[in-house]
Image (cartoon, rainbow, N blue to C red; front, side):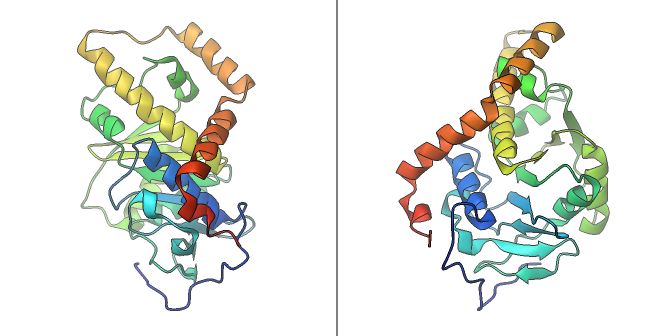
Length: 249
């Protein structure tokens, strides 16, 4: 499903709250932090009150503009085309949204350290205190390229279950969260902490004890760590990506 339209959606009155702009900003923040996925990977956002979602095309994360984002139905019908066709392989986004009413943003990435960690067979652990945000909420998926998207999508949604993220062995990760901001920051945390874990495992490091990890988690949630991290990254984006902000109506 890669459809290029000659009649893209009119974005002449685009604002910062528009889902297309937010998705473009999210992709660029991920790129800034080293989480590009070459031309693969997807960032999607549920369309409120509809059985539909906004999603990105094949492209590098740092080149995403609002005009590139398409809106597609849960049946993968293109409702509002972008100037670049929606990426193929997005079936599982629809399946996650259908299975998880609490999830409003899904991100699939091929980030380096999370992908490396998946090759070890080791479970994600709290080897750095930020990892406490995701403790007990990481599923694991063994990729099977022989599966067709219509079969794979429901299986991915079932394996993700009520977790916040899923490591895909030898592939990457999927994050699902209540907001785009939380999904982005939790992916940043996943990648950062996977790096710490891989390096710690090399020297025989051990994960943090459960009680201390839970206290870290409570503190980070209490003081709005994820929102503050998003705000800080967004401030930096204003300085580094003028072409994105030039799209505002």
